[in-house]
Amino acid sequence: MAKQLFIKTFGCQMNEHDTEKIAGVLSNLGYSLTDSPDGADMIILNTCSVREKAEYKCYSDLGRLLELKKKNPDLVIGVGGCVAQQEGERIVQKAPYVDMVFGTDNISEIPKLLEKKKGQRKGAVSTERRKKGLVPQGGTDFISVPFPSMVRNHPVKAYVNIVDGCDKFCTYCVVPHTRGRERSRQPEDICHEIQGLASAGYKEVTLLGQNVDSYGKDTGGHTDLADLLHRINDIPGIMSIRFVTSHPADFGDRLINAMKRLPKVCEHLHLPLQSGSDTILERMKRNYTYPEYRDKIRRLREAIPDVAVTTDIITGFPGESAEDFDKTLEAIEEIQYDGIFAFKYSRRPYTSARLYGGQVPREVSEERLSQVLEIQDCITQEKNQACIGREFDILIEGESKKDKRNLTGRTRGNKIVHIPMEEGISIGAILRVRITSATLASLKGEVVRQGRGL
Ligand code: SAH
Ligand code: SF4
Ligand code: F3S
Image 1: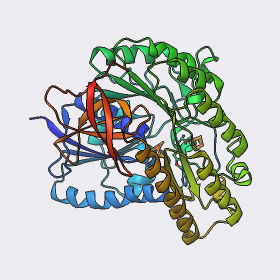
Image 2: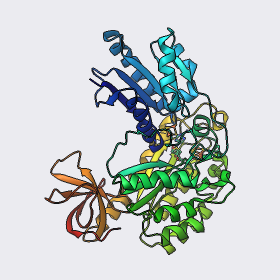
Image 3: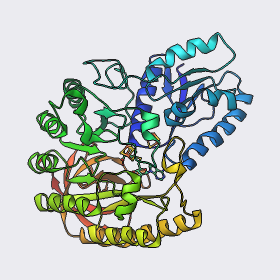
Image 4: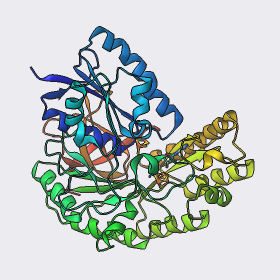
């Protein structure tokens, strides 16, 4: 019988995609995924370090895994992802029952680490970084090429790495330290992978990078994100293309034009603002002002009136005064986002803001966070209500998790839509749906007709 593998994934889409690679590497060793840790032969935590709470979860989960290991001494425990990259050896020192620790560039070394562990008491650790610069064509880096048996999580939509790492060093952010310097994949490798996905029946790809606008800068600038989108748009079978995350300093007219011109590129932009105050943006080292940001959104909306815009906000960054925070609220009111991910500032290792004066008390950051969420809830509610009666093309992604009598899909603006299950509708179908009701979290609709294709 196949050995059972349980992977718990924290953090961003990059990590979710890494989990698919980890499962792929381990499937070659005879492991198959299970959705419960009980009875598993191997348990892997794919960790996130972006905020303190996420890192803390890694250690609290490890505490619980010790109990499972006591019951089953043969259980293999692995830790990967951003906490693994950041902490390395310290993980096996703190939790000596961990068998292996692998960094964000070391997924392909898992078989070697397991072999090494067999010969020693101590857990095997690898967090060695790949070098900056272009990933050689077909190269064995973080890319999917060496993971032919990647176990993808979804039958019709797929993540595809285009650039890994980040060179921005925003002063609050640990990601450049856990993911390393920017490295772009060769456009040929990306297109080859997407052609393969199309042949296997995938309909949608989401291009991943901490900063997708940087794509190609390290390849000599021959192919940037706009060029890449043109090439992917030409791949038959792929019906919809998304990308995350853009950076406001780099996002510009070339990408706006590509989004406007290319029929398969979805009308959605996630553009993290972080703060509406120029003083705070400067202290964050974001390299844009709020008026510059607002101007880019204006140009985007002029080009694509129906575009959905979402963002990330941090409250309580060191030195954030009541006036600074008011500017964030004003920006949220002014831009009218379709959705916001908001976080209270968390002090992270290796970052420069860690040492800044004016750390804001937790209660104040929390209060500000709830104000952001409250204002945004009203805006989201209004925007969702405004969808009632309108028609959208929806890619059907699967059964609704909450109610098996419903199917779930997304609008091109990334809003979740539930429709009643009907005979003849298959996962991966594109349907024209009329919205009949809306809540804060999702829309409900009825099928008007089979879609024309996006
Ligand atoms: N590269 C992406 C994703 C970075 S992490 C980007 O630039 O947007 C995702 C979000 O986490 C960030 O946009 C930011 O809002 C938040 N974040 C990062 N570091 C944080 C910290 N130290 N405290 C609170 N939120 C943080
Ligand atoms: Fe972090 Fe800034 Fe890089 Fe985003 S752009 S990953 S927030 S350093
Ligand atoms: Fe977390 Fe690492 Fe992603 S820190 S947000 S899992 S890049």
